Amino acid sequence: MKASFSSGILLLLLASLPAVAKEIRATVVYDDVATEINPAPSEDASDQLWITTAELTRATRFEIKPQGVCRDELCFPLPKARMQEFLRRRAPLTWFNLTAFAALVHQPVAHDAATFTWYFGLRSDQQQALASRRAPDFTLPDMEGKLHSLADFRGKKVFLITWASW
Amino acid sequence: MDLPGWQAIYQQLKDKNFEIVSVAEDTGGVKDAGKAITDAKPAYTVLIDQEHLVAKLYNMVNVPTGVWINEQGRIVRPNEVAFVDDRFRNLTGLDSAPYLNALKDWAEKGDKSAYIMSEDRLQAKLRPPDADAGQAAAEFGLGEQLYKAGHLAEAIPHFKEAQRLNPKSWNYKRQAYKLSSESDYGTTFVQEVQKAGGGKVYYVPPELPQAAEPQEKKP
Image (cartoon, rainbow over all chains, first blue to last red; front, side, top):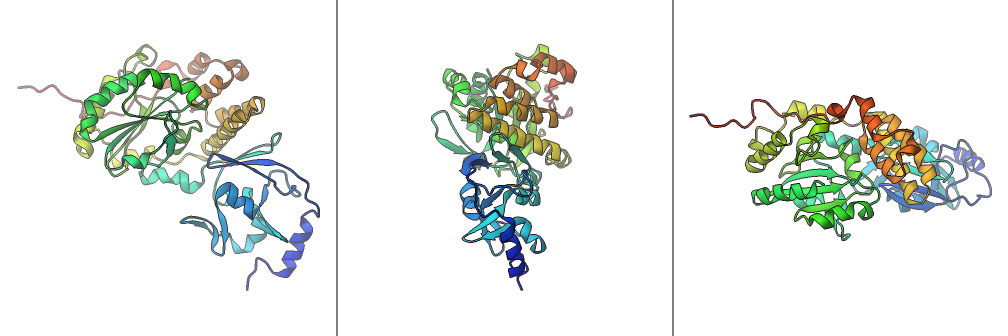
């Protein structure tokens, strides 16, 4: 039995979303990449961000799969009993609560109400990475725009050193 | 600037399977960091980090911050001030020589160097950020995003919130001042340093083992 989408719950969920979605533009910043999206007009609380599953993938590369919310090798199962906190169906769209998901994966979120901008920080799996002593990888451009990854230097001793113009 | 100094170190050490990866923590990107790179023409890799990603991933709170990463991609000395010369000695009370000697020792001996940090110290120093520091990073990231989108006035409250949540981060203060001005924050860098206890505590000195200080050979 699938507890998450029994018809009773589904009806309830349908009623909870407005019939006509007002056009709102919001900016989601995920992995420091900004994506413009059309979120669902927020009913319950303005600190919740509901986006379509298609926009979830466009903005974060995460996808809803039977086993959870997944990207590449990474998968976060959604708690079955709390499915309605994360997913709501309103044909033809399914909406996903990106802020509830952030709370689930212990990801800090910063929000600017005036500009409808949402910034998603490092998830706890990314924050824990340091404790393994493995140097977190990154890919950044040089002055000419050519990308370099820390991992390109594997096999050598690397002295990582920061500086700034300020 | 630090870039020419590291070029001299790189010349000495580059044949020891040793690389320097230098990262500019500059929201303004090439516009702000470019000139120093063009002037120094370093032979090592210099990257531009507009989102302060490296500071975020490694929990860095100031520049210059050095990290040693071994051949297997493991951190063997994390996050400490790494001066290439003594330009700031009057302010900080720190000599660059002990750290640079340690770095040369590591380039030479790798994991056998006495300057590799002990497992216990590594564990202690590589703890993930607490909830406030994590939230501060998100507020700072939001501020940067708003700044880049042309919303400086909206960015400032988020930079302030980042500074409040993680008062240890000088990056959050100084980068934000650079993007507008200290007056937007009702303070100055000098005042902030004094508030923190002065130049001598502005940087935490590197933890270099006393016993492993290079000794002059006695007959």
